[in-house]
Length: 164
Ligand code: FES
Image 1 (cartoon, rainbow, N blue to C red):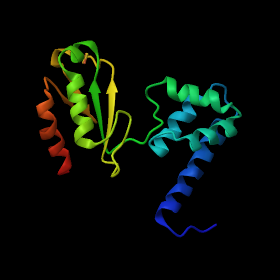
Image 2 (image 1 turned 120 degrees about the vertical axis):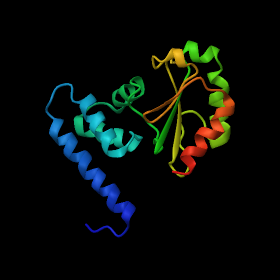
Image 3 (image 1 turned 90 degrees about the vertical axis):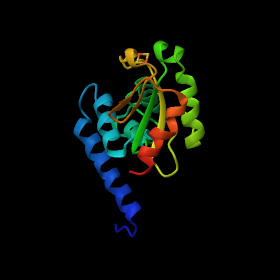
């Protein structure tokens, strides 16, 4: 079959990759988690269509696949942005105002927690304590850690990434 658009070609490449991953683990016990990991590496997240393929390919009920995906925080059902913003909502950060910081990100990006901007540049998540409570309240963007923040810092932080 020939594909005549870049997006279609990419989708069919990914679908081929997924088939290979499923075939590689098909007869292995406990295959679901490694397959989900590898599929997420290919797609960047685990949309329902991908979960359905995995369910059919491994002969595991879709409800079970979905249960595992939604249980483990390392799996995501929504697409992630080029810059993944995580606002810590652990106790130390929360008492120091992480909620206002999260609200500011939501307003500035016009997205909710778990969503991604239309241009796929930013995604926003709230997370549990990341073990940097001395810097509370803490936000991470990919591998970058920002500490002792106030809601007023959000504009400056985002401006740095807008220019990238
Ligand atoms: S509570 Fe936020 S880093 Fe620990």
